[in-house]
Image 1 (cartoon, rainbow, N blue to C red):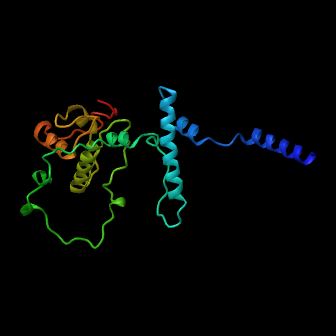
Image 2: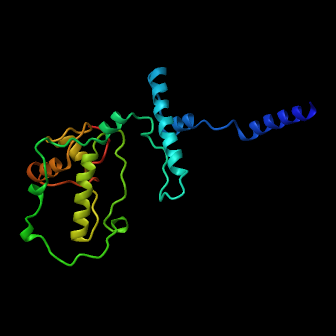
Image 3: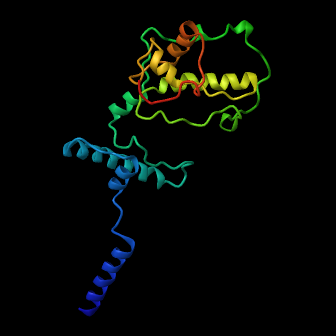
Length: 205
């Protein structure tokens, strides 16, 4: 009996010193500032989170994986919501992108390297955060242009995704779009892309 009492006292003392066991769901909500409109909504979000938590734990427990997974602000989304957030809306009449490519006859030809790893390329820009806006199409379009400019002229440039979100009439802002449409807009309507310093990102229309 004395031993049981002593164990209980130690358990309480450890709880006071180190705190109660962490609740991953509450930690996730606090970290990402998550607030929900109803108890039912939060219950569904928690269900989504726990499903992804199990998937992450299963992946990370494997010995031969080359990367580790973790939670982010999307972990409480449904598959449908995540698809909408990614924002890719491919036009029905688009089958290939040759119409915005240089003719093969004028493309530069040279010996290809035996290997190429763009992850360490000097022109590869840092990853940007699009926030709660389904405009991944704009980031795809702008990222390609930034890289092409840097590779040709030798100096990096940071261009404005927000220009496309607000003014590209071929696409749908935070509700989706297509990178080829964005290129056509910049070429045929806007006359080019402006720098981010002149038109900064707001993550909304």
